[in-house]
Length: 286
View 1 (cartoon, rainbow, N blue to C red):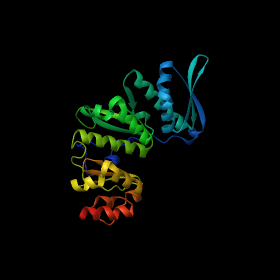
View 2: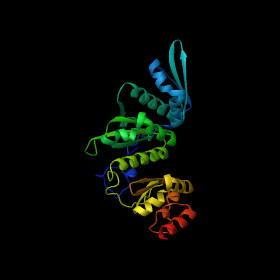
View 3: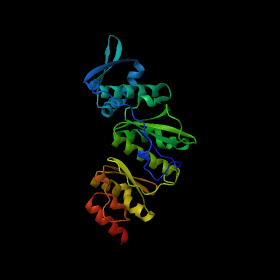
View 4: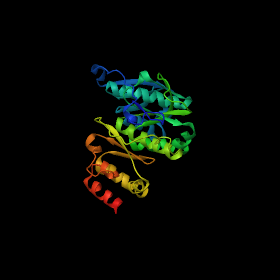
């Protein structure tokens, strides 16, 4: 799992490759397909089901398991079908969702399954990041196929000072990275310079990593496009996650998706699309 950067971190390295906590590999014999059952209260059953069954479907989509909620002998029983790892993740997500109903959610480093990203959100940005009635978080969950909630994290020392709250994101790496960058962009919008201050151009050497590049104001305006349409086109054409945090463009994906084209100094040189790599720099120069 990774934690988001703060201005106090070393900006010469990618924030997504610095801090991680990984659980020891799970034995393969635990990954056999099977079924687990969990007895839950009426209140928890309603919370897990969610409006129109959306919460239950979301948990299944993120974990990869199949969830069925039924009543047996007067008790609510949640049936979880999947491999050992899928069932473990599902049980973890379900317990986190149930915990939200009664109080703070506690996340322990010992429960890490290489499926968690933590972002430290300044207290003054929590409401902005959450959105009205949680709409921003729910939108990110639907877009990126993750589960998100604010949590208290145990098992790791604080790495920075200041008043922040931890936003937990569970799900596959690509989905977590996309949601994480959206949150960082929102924080930067609320407190300009909070995330981007001290960042430098960076090219990752990881098989799946994040490159960053500073853009001038005119480059940013055109590279973003009307209502973000140019950014979306770049992302579709390259297969790369493209997000702007202030004037810093973040590109996450494999090396081919992040590949720098031989058009130095222009934002689109960081996209794989030949068409956009040609046209955008020409437009900026003209």
